[in-house]
Length: 190
Length: 64
Image (cartoon, rainbow over all chains, first blue to last red; front, side, top):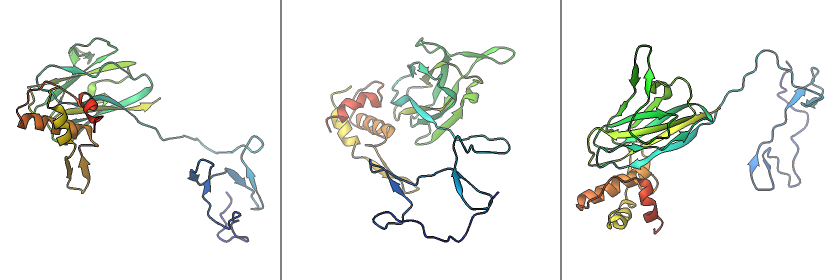
């Protein structure tokens, strides 16, 4: 690998206004630092742009990491006044490879969360998961927590493979008299 | 929604508080805060209401 020169023979060039900033500006006003991928000659004599005639040579395995997370609103501050369930509506999550959930429950009562996989029905029935012995429905009790946040992953629901569609159901354990509940699905795109 | 909803929304929108880390939270910017305060208004003024959500308050926000 070549070395980086700590001293330069010539100064960094200036623009017509004699500004020596490296930041560039596009026609729409956005400013950024342009980056050009080059390889440096072994004798430090030249830079050559990476391209078809000068492909980037990388030894060893290369992996690109980093991901975007998209938020899907499931329950937008629902203030329950009785124990009648509410559903999120069926959500198509086929574009995600995993998801997690974040809830805020400022109610004065516990709210139970269940779910249905691949269903378009809107009742309070939950999907039962085969645990190797029996089918067991999964319910997560979200406690009354003021401004506290409650976070859990798809594994915590017993979901190990991504379904195409999912529907969440909230049912208060008792009728709340104050507060509301908000639920967001955070999906990681494929 | 109750006929008092517009008054409740107007009152709730004024609410803000600073948490222990110094961050200011405003009902006008956080949906759950707005709903909680509207509900508080209903409770304190003996207004009868059924289950509602932020989406139910959106029409009342457009008048502000």
